[in-house]
Length: 260
Image (cartoon, rainbow, N blue to C red; front, side, top):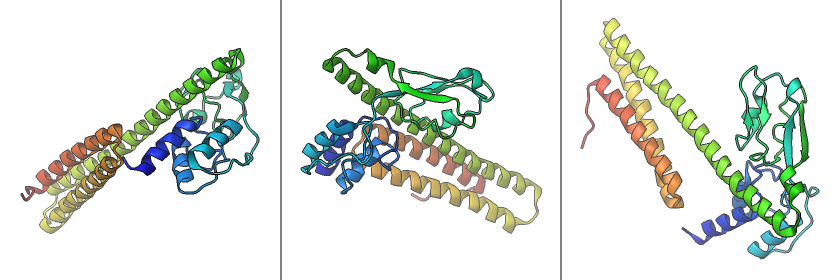
């Protein structure tokens, strides 16, 4: 791991992991990367002045006033009697802290909520309030407050990472299913058409799509290996394996074998 990656990790650890986007980036990790690239260090309201001071120490820059007022730890509360079950807040939550289903009442898991506010804007009936987090209010000493902030940051990072992996897996599965559908369609077409050239072209299209998926998966694996992140490498290897199986299916439909 390079010195730059170590610095990104250290800065990421200093951020509050609310994943709120108030810094202008889609999460704390992207903001850490942007800071290393030269972005200002004063764009994290949930972190407050303490985070600005810590970032100044890490980057060797001068502390500067926050661009927006500091924000204490918050929690979202859904007024459940008014909830219409639209699932928009569930889709917006960066840490999967909202439970519910379509046309069913939703509720916030307070212990998992980072108070990011991202659920507020999508709600079409304005039934979500933001309140001081009860665990923060219950912290009766500076040590207890720091323990709460550290626990929130650790949990927020883990849940944000898990959600992103889930979304990436679901997107990958949809893409693979579309490619499998193309393979099945070309296979059916091959049984129902007498035009050999069309049949071959359709099968080749399926192979080409599968080859592109495999190349993309290998590129992602190479990037993950350069980053040196174990979880990312394992995920990328799974993608390579899935793409390889898809290509094998496509080549079997085309009745060719890979060259050695």
